[in-house]
Length: 382
Image 1 (cartoon, helix red, strand yellow):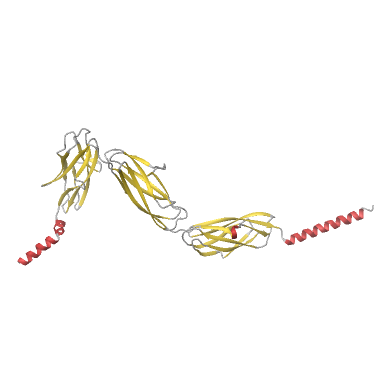
Image 2 (cartoon, rainbow, N blue to C red):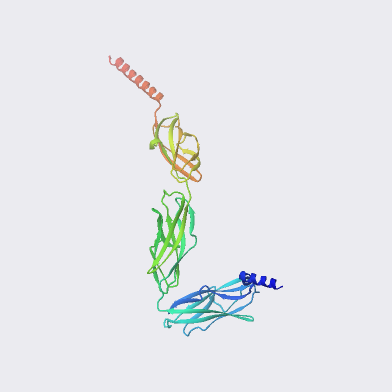
């Protein structure tokens, strides 16, 4: 029996959390039980009323030992409260709001937050030290520190700058980005670009950093750091930009020539170049055309299976002008599309007269000349 007791005692000493985990009760807790404030300032301290393994019950709340001239209030959901009822294994968030007179003496004070539950009393002592002037202090909180998009995406990072100082500050904003990236700061729902922003003591400001990568950016992960600074205080937050590959199509003619000649009713072949200037392969590219009425345009091949990033593929466009096409210049639009990407190019097609009609014209002119010469010879003798 003695050995069993020794074994149980050894286990309890080795694993004290097993005992703590079984403890039940009502607790008042805060992350900052001792803080420094400035006379004349208004500050809110977050608290929490926790219920661990107890049935829900009403808990009366009050603040004791408040110095004369101070206004200290308990808030719940932004409103004054005098009681709370946390559910089993749940917490109720509270705030302790200090409104200090400007004439308060600079020294250390202790107040008590009291929670009265049936058959028990819980106290949370809070030490408050008053200073003549608090040092500047800033904080940054980002909501979505990592964003993903294509090379033509503008990445918008929303963040909050907190002024945890006892005085108003003008906060300067800067961003570290890779070369040729374009960062701009605006208010969260504004469009005016900012380089600094005023923030009152104890308040915060919601801001947005928009970063536009260069069009030639390659796929990859890029680090960005946002800085906020004022006087001797500064704060930073690390962000990540994940750029995914994206194809970008372009159509041109061979050697850059985007014109050709054709004859009415005759098929002419014109080479076209489809280039992928993007950062990812383009797949399943379909070729199509918009030509004048009565014209026919066919491609060989009509579908390009894949064009690697930075590469180009040549196809042949077989263009047949209408039999009724007059001599002159006509515009034909050739398009390449696939995978959500598309591109188009305008080609000038010059229609010339056919060789047969040229011969017929010469014959007609020759006949006309002979008739005219014969008429002059016949009627010239009279």
